[in-house]
Image (cartoon, rainbow, N blue to C red; front, side, top):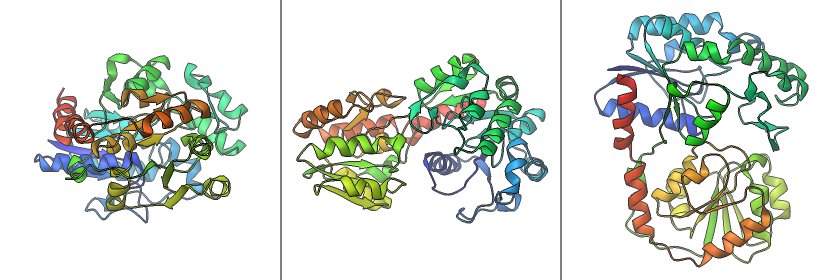
Length: 381
C-alpha cells in the first residue's frame, strides 16, 4: 500500500510529530511505501520528499496559508501525481498547510484518514481554553464568533479574526465531506467531536502507540522521588503541582522547559528540582526510577504520550481527572485542586506497586504491532 503522511512539521517537536515519525517507520517496516508532506522548516529531518514541501510560513503567509495557498496546493498536487497514494493520512495540518489537503486528495478518489491530535476542528485556538486559563466550549455549537469577542488567538484582534475566518471557511460540513475517517486517540475526544456535531459514524477511537522497545529495562528499582515531565505552562497544571509539592516533604524532579520556568523556580522549595529539557536516554532513567509521575493538566488532554511512556517504564501515573487522562490511569485527582492532589501524592508515595507487571501490561497494550493491526484496517476499509 502507498501511504502519504501529512503533518505541518517533520521533526520531534511534539506528540503529533513523534506519532507521525513513529508511524512512518512502522509502515515501512511492514513493507508499505510511505511519503511525507510538511512545511519546509529549518529543524525538519532530512527526507527525499522535501522537494515537495512548501516554504516555511512567514508573517504575510498567515493571511493565505490557513485557507489553502497556491504554493501548498501546487506542491501537494505534484506529490499526489508523482507518488499516487492509496491513502492520505492527515495529522496536524491547520494554518501552515490547511485542510485543503483533504479536499485535493478526496477529489481524486483517494481515501482520507485524519488523526486528531487537538481540538482545532471544534475550537479556533486548538485547546478549548478561554484566555489560556478556563475550559471553554462556546464554539462547539458551530458559531465561532466568540473567538473574535474574546480575542482568543494570542490576545490579538487580527490573529483572532484570521482564526475565526479559518473556522468559518473550514466548517464541519466541508471537513466531513472530504474525510473518510477521523481517528480520535481518546473516547473523550470522540465524544466532544460528536457534541460539536460531527458524525460519530466517521470516527474511530484508536489510542496512540509508542516504540515500546525503547522502554525495555532489566531493573525496576525506584528512587526517593516522584516526577513531572512536560511543558512548564499554565494549561499543564504545573503551578498546581508546585503548590501541592511545596506542602509536602517528598522530593520531586521537574523535567521540561516552558514560559513559567522562572516564575515556578522562584516559588518552589528546595526539594523541588528543575532539570530542564532532557533527551530520551536521560528521560528513561529519570522517569523509570521515579516512584510515580504526575500529569496535573488543566485542559482537555487528548491521549498524552507522557502517561503511556511512564507506564511502559513501569512507573505509575497520577493524573488529573480531565480530558482523556482517566482512560489511561485509574489514579486521578480533581483537576486544579491542590488539596486533592496533595492527598493523592501522600497516598501514592508509599503505595505498593508491581512495577515490572505494570510495564509488561502497558507494553503489550501500547505496542506498535497492535496499533498496526488496527490502523491497516482503517486504511483498507
